[in-house]
Length: 164
Image (cartoon, rainbow, N blue to C red; front, side, top):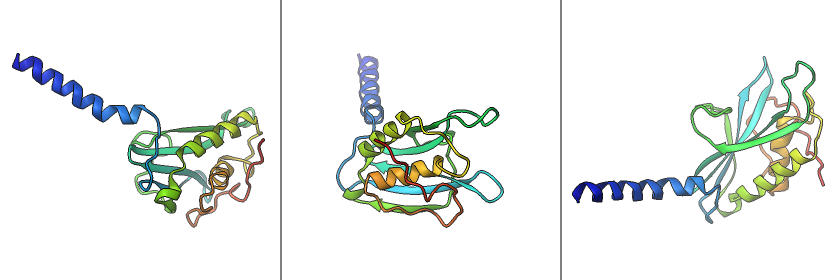
């Protein structure tokens, strides 16, 4: 009986810890932060991404090309998920700027909706613009988050992607 009680307790605690993460990116007022981070992708160019943190964890938002560049870059695609070691843009000490914090930063649903709209637009990916950095600028712009980035050269940052 003691063994069964321990197993039930472990399952209950596991469910309590995992369920908020599996439930998506809910926001709770006053507990959110939006950071814009960068990582080098060429000699002097940088790729920007967003790390959105709320009470359930940290999530990344990014853009990129649908193709690998060998036969062209394709269209802009977006991606998001838990920001953990091993994810595509995970950089331990990436240059970072906090764009918003507190209630105004609880933009997870807006980021999700805007990213879907950008990808649905089938916009041609450009090396200089529009590109992954334009996606980050557009997410911030559309969600009324301060449009800032680390002090790096990020081609495409100046472009806000028009979408329906």
